[in-house]
Structures are given as C-alpha cells and as structure tokens.
Image (tube, rainbow, N blue to C red; front, side, top):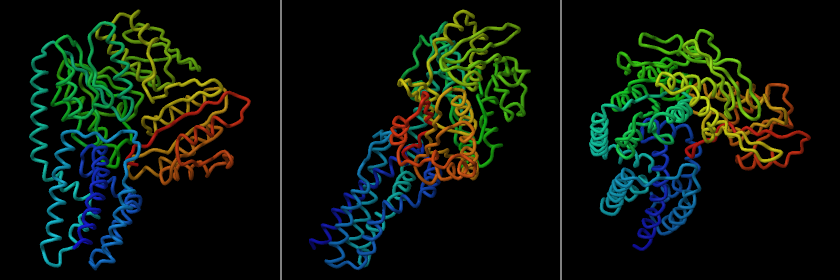
Length: 511
C-alpha cells in the first residue's frame, strides 16, 4: 500500500506545478481557449519535452507493481523540476479568476485520484489526467464559464452605469494593428495641456482591462477618456465600443497582425473599422491614410485623414529630418502649418503624432502648448526608446514586432552613423505567412545592419534563412540563446565607430 501512496503524493505535487505552468500560459493567452490551443499546438514539441517524465511514469503505472511505482515516483519528482517557476517577463498573477480555476482543477484531479483508488482496473486514471493536465485546465475553465460570464457581465454593467452618469465626458477610442499604444500616450500628453485626461494604462486594452480602468480610476474631474482598444478576434472592437460608446476614434494602422486568429487581412480591416462603425453622427474619425488598407476602406462619417506620405491627407506631416537627438517636422492642418521638434525617432512616430495633433487642434489645444508638449514627449517604453551608454546606444523596440514596425525600426537604425547591430528573435502571431514574413525580415536586416544577432530557435530560423540567402557576411550573422548574451557580445565587439544596437521584439513567456 505504501508504494501507491508515495506515487500519488509525488504525482499530486508534480500535477500542481504543471497546472500552475499551464494556468500561467492560459492567462498569457487571454483566457481564450481557442488561442490557448493554437499556442499549445504551435509549441507542442517543447511541451512534450517538459512532459517526457510524466509520459514515462504513466506507462509504468499501468503495470502497477512495487518496481514500476517506485520508478514512476522518481519520475514525478523529475517532472516537478521541469515545471519549477522561472523568472517571467510577465509574471503569473493570482487573480480571483485564477483562484477559482485552480480550485476547480484540484477538484477534478481529486476525483481522478478517487477513481484510481476505488474503481477496479482504473488505477491509471489519475496518471492519465496528469499527462493531460493542459486539457484539465481547459475543462475546468469550461466548468467555470457560467460563473465567469456572470461575474464579467456584472463588472461590465457597473462600468456602463458609471460612464452613463458622466454626460460631459468625451471618450476617444484608439485602435490599430500597431501604433495604438503610442498614439494613446501621445494624445494623452497633448490633451493634458488643457484637459484632465484619463487613459487606459499599460496594455489594458481588453474588455476587462477597460472595465477595470473605468471602475477603479475614472473620477468626476476627468474630462476626457482615451481608451485603447485591442483585438485578436472579429467582434473584439465592437464589444469594447458597446461598453464605452466612444465619441471620436483614431485608427492608427491595419496590417498582418494576429493572423493566426483573424485568418485573413480582410477580417483585420473589418474588425478595426468596428470602431469607425461605432462613432455617432457628428463624431470625427481620424484615419491613417498612409496605410493603403485604411485608405481603401469604407468611409462616410466626418473623416480626418492624416499621414506623412499621402500628400492629400487632411493633416499632413512633411519636411521630416531625423538625427540622434530626435526628429523635426512640419504639420499642415486646416491651412495652418506648424513646426515641431521631438525626441521621438522615425517617420512612423511622426505619422502617429500627426493624427494626435489633429485631434488636439480640433479639441481646442493652443498651438504654443502643442509645440511644447510635442517637444517634451518621451519615448513610450520599449518602442524605439533610446538608451545612451557612451560608445553604445541601445534602441529598445522590444515591446512587439510586425512587418511595418520592423521596417520603420530598421530605417531609424540605418539613419545613424556608426556600427549598426540588430538583436531579434523574429516576429510571431502572423498566421500562415509568419515564416515568409520572417524571411523577408531577415533579407531587410541585411540592407541596414552591419551585424545581425538572432535569438532563440525555430522563429529565428526563418529570419536566419532570409538573411543567409543574401551576400551578407556569414561571420556577422550570429545566433544566441538569450537577448542578454547578444547585447553583451555587442558591447564587447570592437569598433572604431559608435555602436547602435536595435532590440527588435522580445518574445513573450508563452513562446
């Protein structure tokens, strides 16, 4: 009897560690079961490696004797080591939802253990539940769904009631495949010269993130609410608009982001334009007309087009000059030209600023206040953020990466006079085109960089293939396991010129 008890105790401990890991991944995947399964299938090899000892233990338990149970117990301990928590970029948060989910998981596993002890010829059932721990997590979430839905709806109803009571609050929705977070920060800074502005913090661009912002941070003194709206599925922006009912909107871009869930670029366009559809008559929609997909989309409301390439844009940024210190440019809107200087780098930042400047002007912000506010703008963290370190300057663009953003970042890197180095793991969430776009990214890197440092394995493989297909020097195309190792190598690299290191993307913990 002692051997089965030892096995089940060690198995329970290992199961808990594995369940915590998969709950963390489920949390990072936004609690979307379909998205979580796409992630699971995408990295099935890595998951199988972590579960190797658990699989072997399951096979041994089927035979159920002293020897096999002893070995299985040892393998359970080794499985614990495989799932020990490691430092995370986005740590696991023990929210109320996670606590409810964990409770249900434990109940399910306890039932499986009871079956293993009490039902003849079913002694392997709990071991089977262990090797299928990820599916136990998802099954527990299905069980909890009615409760979670009721709680979510209650919070949403409360947020709606708060917003309905704020008749004088102007709500501005911002969305886009990329650039929306930068626009949110920029617009908030510009409008804050005249108004008391609340914005959704960090990446609080989901329904519950927006609801949390309204319930916990919106005060009677706030005059404007700048609401970032993210989307990974059709209908996500509409859901957000149904909560906050924006009066104005800005669409910063449309591109091949999250194609693994959207499937087609047409679905991306339609989803972003759910914000356009939600703006009431009399409300303005600000659209980036440098983006062809936006420019060719439907239009009918009071539209303000902006950009720095489309010459017929209502709000046009021109005469753009870039240096290590920042960017100078002019903005022409409503027949008036204003000169701006900013610490921000790159045409895409000027592009985003043009839209924000147009909104600020329409909201009555004085020209002198705008010029000063733009001059004082700091880089949004991890979005082409310049970090000067003497003979080496880090250009931190690690928050996210997409085809348009990588091109813009490489153009910024290429504008500097010095030794140019890129450190990147490649791009993700690009669906069936991911490998192709990463190969194109690799080719593009060779046009601007003196050194290409690739981090990680399978995703970086495609970038490597693209770069390696050119005449780029093979000795300057290097692979590293971690970003820190690549940056340290760049620091030690001998160069007669100042070194510029572009950190382009940093994969999340679930990749």
